[in-house]
Length: 133
Image (cartoon, rainbow, N blue to C red):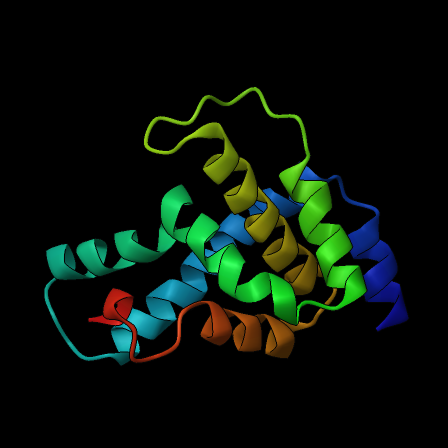
């Protein structure tokens, strides 16, 4: 575990956000596919409710009080990272908060803390929320 943490801590926040974006998407897809069989357009519609910057920024409000000090520091590194991207469907604050969330999930993935990532995902989006319907 120590080696995995060292590796994860060596990546820049935006690299962690890059892998975290994919890992978060995988958690979302796993959730909606396990929710039952439906057509692809429905799957895309359901996934969109989770993966937008606005939705992820909102999830941060539910998650922040539950983070360890180390997790909160990782989230803040991602949130405060300088990007050259201009968000189209969210304001700058929402975009940065979503980047922080993706950074956290990337860090959890790279540091081999997938059980914690799944736990935090469930806390962000409890199974019976409107987002999952």
